[in-house]
Length: 412
Image (tube, rainbow, N blue to C red; front, side):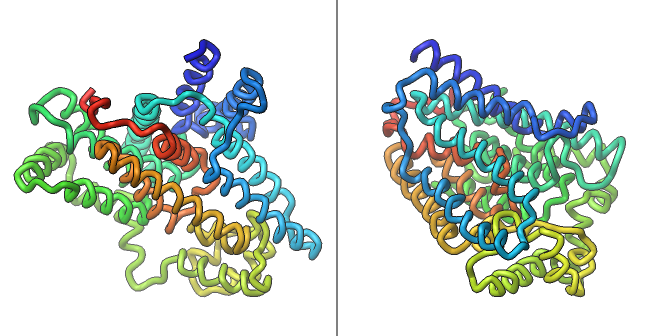
């Protein structure tokens, strides 16, 4: 690898590690600014890639370009909303800027000569960052605030998504790792899995339980070995048992934001259902063209469609996103963008499936993919850098030269 590429790759590793600390400037120092370090670093990395090689050798993957078309097609309903004087320009431009940055890094970073070990390095660094943020969230929950926690991330749902991906990664490595059940590496992976699980509870994200549970089931029943499954599950439950020897179970459950928000659903309508149904009504009123980029939470649209709802949780808000990435693209960006978005996921899945057939040990990335697909059904993380980081890593694995099983020592 060239020196310039090695420098850029290390900068990308730094960018990945910084993602779980996306809002640290405001949380730690009270600086509320869009000029965040990881965003500037993403732009700088792309600039370095362009300037260190000839323009004609820069390549883009066809599947990745579908995400560019998602935005370009989304400009049509946005232009119509602007012509009808119902486009809130501030929301449109902020989202457009964020989309440019994540698309910039996604399209350009794959011009580096990535190897599978680099993908694992990225996952390790991201997982360590998530672990640190988990510890910070747990500390805040215990000592400062028993409400929903996000730590150094933008909001609790983004933190929950990061925890889900980190948990799936750590738990898979723990579960399939060969060797002694009590090896240091297995114990460390088990502790990491446990911390991310507790961190998930303090984020209060109900929907994350679906993708989390599915990840656990897929990992356990993948090439199922009954004896190994029992041993691993027993080992996994051990730290839970120890934890509740020092922490009152009933007190923890009743105080945990996740449990509290699950209980709150009894005899009440989930606000997401209101957002989805009213979003559909708004979409219909545009003659199925689309509301425009980031326009569902436009106060004018929100008052018109959501404030009339009897669901207090949704109606009392000034503006909420749709809490569904697929519906966000469909209702705001339009049908053509939605087709491109689904096409991107479908193309990614097919390529991952091919790679896993060549090297089954890459199955962990398919687990992350499924986790992401399910999580996106219940939350809006489409412009989150963490979501696009997963797009990048899965794309790197999916489109790199196939790595035969014997050439990858997974236990390192």
